[in-house]
Image (cartoon, rainbow, N blue to C red; front, side, top):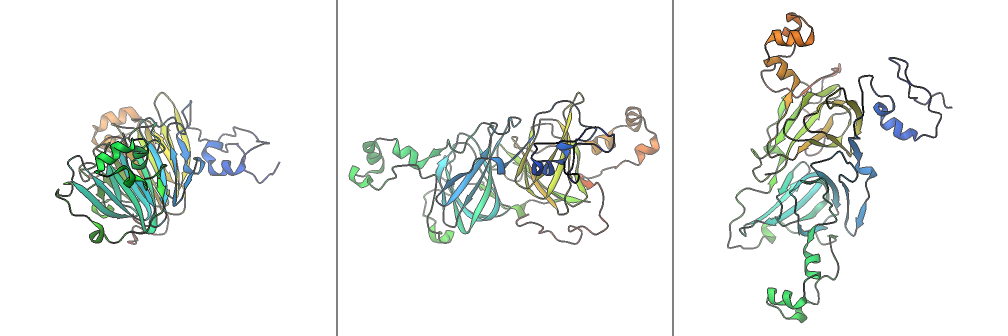
Length: 403
């Protein structure tokens, strides 16, 4: 036995014993709160974490894709996530879905195009931190620009698979040639160049500027843009971080999915809270975190997260997210509901008559008077404030590209 290895023994109460192996020690280091759970953890709660690093990687000419559905994470009952990358010029083929698609740019730049059911067109360029949203049935394409791109896609069904979409090439392959010729007002011989297999992701040249490639149209552009640039979201500044909320109130095209973009300084935490209208689907972009989920009836479990991980919180379950690293934690909370909502424990206690709080917590009026009295939302608070000034207080608002 290596005496220097961390063992499943909890120092606070001495419970546990040595793990002589075999064991995956690197996994244990990544998940210290699963190896040695807090004494407050109790009961049986499903796994609420899965990493894109453990997802199957689909490699194509010009890019790749991987997905986390309820196959990989059964606790996810509302949403599915896809992580995709395109080299400069490469396309995610023209396509559409039965589900709403909500996209977040993680790296680089890309061009998205679309048309709505009234024939109104849309084209825009997006960069890291920007969003797009295409409701079910709305066709679209994505193309990497000069930097290439990586992005997160979230779909409004838990069993969605990126491998089962409506592709332009696939449709034409499975349509009789005489029908295609009649539709396009062509001879069958003119159709020889059409694809004979799905294109999905494929290489092409980096396009010119939008004003160089945009085609004339008898219709006007869509009235509500299908993209959202993150600088449009006003941040909620907090003592230990900030939150940007994007939902149908400031992104009208997003009629199914809403999100909160959260930044937490080292030593800070997303306060104790819950969401009354939808389960929470999380994606961790930067840093390290731990989260304890309380799911009623004495059931609670703690999980560890790092960049590239997905987390799930069941509908209305109480939780917090603590930054356990030495850099700002950046993650996004995503919901299958057009309106973002949450309930803060601090706010609940601050608005309840003092005697009720005293009676429930077995505390004095003096104790209740000393609790946070939030006049404005404060979703990110200090757990342990570092002696050094935070990067946010120094005015460093660019701790990660695009945020």
